[in-house]
Amino acid sequence: MMEWLIEEILAKYNYWVSIILMLIGFYAMIAKGNLIKKVIGLSIFQTAIFLFYISLGDIVGGTEPIVIEGYKGIYVNPLPHVLILTAIVVAVATLAVALALVINMYEEYGTIEEEEIIEKERELGV
Image (cartoon, rainbow, N blue to C red):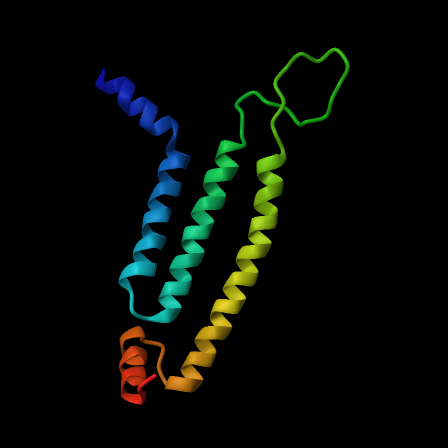
């Protein structure tokens, strides 16, 4: 019983890696006060989602989705991979906008630490 459990866990290592990356990214977004670290955490989280969806799209023994007459095998669905290509473009754009906002906040407040920015806003009465 225990050997079977270990084999099942090790057989799905890509899912475990994506879960660990999600947790690391989520921790960085929630626990860190530095805005650059939060943006990096967001990027790690997004990458974990990409890995997860690409892992879901793979079928052991599947072939390319090219229809051949008389072939009775299993085809791999290309849709998850195509969607992830689009998501990567959106993630890069999100990262660029987030970094631009961090730069603007640094120019405005002179810091990228969340607590210091909140304190300065309280002082200004905003």
